[in-house]
Length: 253
Length: 278
Image 1: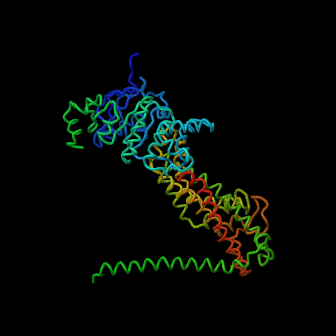
Image 2: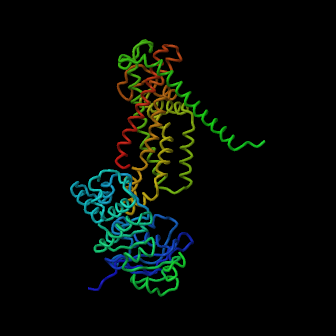
């Protein structure tokens, strides 16, 4: 069987009013791999991630051209149910976002909204998601305490668990470790390495080193342009473009 | 002449401290005056009997019941409309002529003296709809009066919920309504509750508008169509007509205690609901 790309992005242009933030981007992402999209701030990376689950729809001043295919089907097609799309393409934000409710309720929120009522199934789902996010052992005795009392790193893993509980196919992570200490960061990176066996992961790493540690492939973006992409090894040790090399070596950014 | 910064700091500190102390002192003076003179009057008889002899003797049980019923009617009617309007203004529209108009009307409503609401209630509910002087007429009038307060505080509370919470909702595959009820409301609830508590206070303490719409009957109300005399009105009439200073003070003290209790109970309920998350 020919491996089909999970996500295909074709000629994507993205504008906020007149300002163009993504310029003619073409990119393919395969299943079961981690793609790290890195670059300095204002490169359009967050916008790219938010476009992939159409969270960008919420911004009324934004519009886009181009095509994004998920499993070969356009995510902009009229028959696509956008809430279903967002369940399939989960998102973790750059700051931990536990909602003001218990740990259990946070994780079960998505399944519950889909109509999962059975308490037993809910408990099963919560345990499974928390285990996959490597948080279960730390919180199993206090599932019904407020999620906001967890540490920053735990909160972020909770957010990952909350996404996993929806059984997504793709997980988008927008600088998930930018507010975290190195130990929490290591834990999250660890769980991501396990998760890629089942999911397709696209991450905006918070620095080049993080991309090097976890990604199978990397893409470098600068001012809305995709400069270079390919296997992590190749791009980071042998960049073809001068700008990539300057950024990696720390000459700017 | 230039004042030394340290001197001005001392003066400012003195002025601010005395302002705060003065306010607290006045408040304490009023509350202690009412409680000291009123509490001796409060007895089981005072709580359980209806007023006799125009309120010179007997208790105020019918007033307590009337006050509670009228307040409950007002709050139950105004809360859904108030929160609904606030949700519409914050979540379902963009700033436009219409939202500005709604907000302007709500603000104008908030600034109208209560007696005007009373007159409207008298003309519309009591006379035109032929509800008569009744708990229902009074409750509906109070509902209109507290509506702007509930809209304003709910709108404020919903607006301060971080936008990120909404994005979390949407990113978990929630519909707009699910996002509002599951992620926005839980965090806006304390603020919304605060507006409702404020409104309860206004209902309980209103006199002019209530006399015009609920009447001033001393009988025990038997239904929402019965006229009633709320505690604030009873207190006003007792004091104004010089019927019984003791009973006036007793009613006032009970009114204070009632408002205090409502606050405590309501806060406890909200905290119980919210504390699961904080």
